[in-house]
Amino acid sequence: MESVQRTRITDLSWGTIEVKIGEKTMHFRDAKIWPGGAREWDWNETGTGHSPGIQIADVEELLDHEPEVIILSRGQNRRLQIKQETRAFLEKQGIPFYLEETNQAVKHFNDLSQEGKQVAGLFHTTC
Image 1 (cartoon, rainbow, N blue to C red):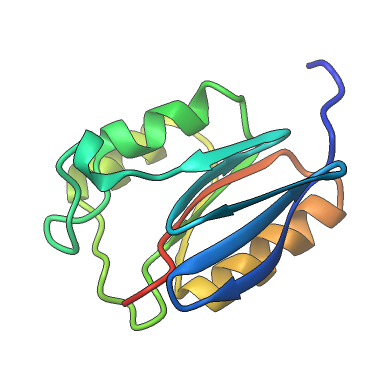
Image 2: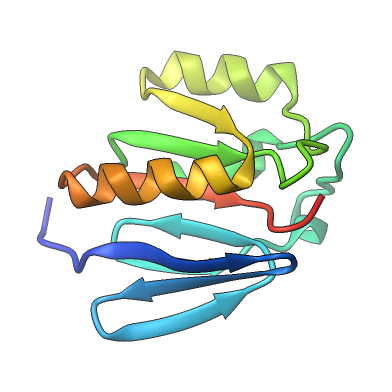
């Protein structure tokens, strides 16, 4: 894999997340983040909602970036669910994944990134 700039989450508050990749800083409401990149996570693209939760289509883009680990946040109040089909799909890929409250997910993402792991994630910044 080619060398990518370090990706880290530098700020999280209700309704916004700040991501820094190298010297570039970006702000999102919800975010898809991968080694060397990030973009807005628009739930309308896949029909995601708190229920049924995270869809396979939400995580497929992350896999395109060949992460070693995936972090999925459930929101700051843990309202976002994950479909059973999505869990099974990720397990079949053989890539470890973690489903965590958003503040914990941000810390976990940054810790793994700091360790040099190729980590990707979905981050929901509100409920």
